[in-house]
Amino acid sequence: MIKSHVFPYSIGGKQVQLKNRIYRPWATVGLVFLLTACGSGEESKPEPSSTIKTASTGFVPSEPQRPGDPEAGYDAIINKAYVTCGIPYDAYKKSDLDRPPKYALPGREGPNAKLPYNQTYYQKADGTKLVVSNCLACHGGVFNGELIVGLGNEAADFTRDFAAAAERMGVYVQGEKETAAWRKWADRTAAIAPYMKTEVIGANPAVNLTWVLFAHRDPKTLAWSQEPLIEPPPKEPVPLSVPPWWRMEKKHAMFYSAEGRGDHARLMILASTFCTDSVEEAKAIDSYAPDIRAYIASLESPVYPFPIDQARAKQGQTVFETHCARCHGSYGENESYPNLIIPLEEIGTDPEYIQSAMGKQLDRFGHWLAQSFYGENSYFNLPAEGYLAPPLDGVWATAPYLHNGSVPTIEALLKSDLRPTYWTRSFDSKDYNDKALGWHYTELTYGKEGAKDTEQRKRLYDTTLRGYANGGHTFGDQLAEEERRQVLEYLKTL
Image (cartoon, rainbow, N blue to C red; front, side, top):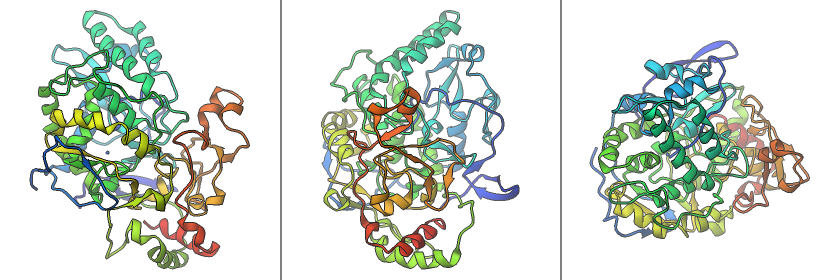
């Protein structure tokens, strides 16, 4: 594994060195416009992409990936604009969005050094200056007050009306060039916003976003159409928890049911289709996409920042290797990861992602990919009737759990009768339960219909809604209580 970028991290006032991961906060800024940047040796040569292949449960084979430079990939993530439309810079400076960044990213240059970590400065060929989203909007998360690059953002608010917010920015725009740039961004936001609204903060609509962008583009020329060219997806997105980037070093395929095959770098830049209006533009972004993938593959998981009972953790390793390693792999000196898709009938978790978000949509959207520049060396498998069991490096930092974020702690994941049907949490990154490994939460006796106000409603996780169920993965129920505590302690060491 390639390593780079060693930066200081403070735990209890003590300076330690952690690689690739955690950066020190500076001043304060709010969450802003989380729109389009989520996306996660030898040239890859899969079978012809004109055919969408049908996946099966079991082992996922590896495929060759294009080589890249992780240092250049990090620079691209923090300084380059692969999303090339956004808010005119002068309008941004006049608005209440212009605040000092709370978290500093080493290596940011020029105006980027003064922007929030999830936004990037971009100057168009005609001289128009913009502020655009970048992939850390979804793939930069805050844990215990520290920004972790590659941790999924489980506090992103997609319950809002992004189209209205984009229109409101128009009051700060001046001049013909700025107006044209803002109008392009606002119109595209209006086209995709109805397909992005989730039921709860933290749930991510990434699949729906990708599909609706496909629907508005000619696959061969990538030209944008304000009206859909093919049937768009349903407006209610299936909720997703954003997986951490550091899993990509071990995974042979992308996405929860391993649909993303072939060249991972090409799939990673699909979010750029929000603004990329020609194959020429797409090729320019693709020229450094392998560097971004190389950086992601170089990431290690963060180190658990609280005390660990090492004796109990050692006992937990034995329990884990007996009951969990078949699906999730083993760790340490002789670590291995099996890359297994576990059948739905065995895992029993919410099937909507497979059956609705992917299964019913891939026929037409997979065909779009196969016709496009992005499908030249990548392709979609029709999802298997199961989920890829993920590697568990740094799993303690990735709450809430399951692919839809329906379970607030690992303790509840390992003991299904602890899972709340209705629950809410503070979304404070320091409100962590180091005993249960997850977020402190409040269990409620009512769902969305009983919410006291809009603010509570968007923070209330209701597992009775379509796609939000918390069932399945009952493998931990067979463990004795002490065995479960031992496994929890062991997971802190990963």
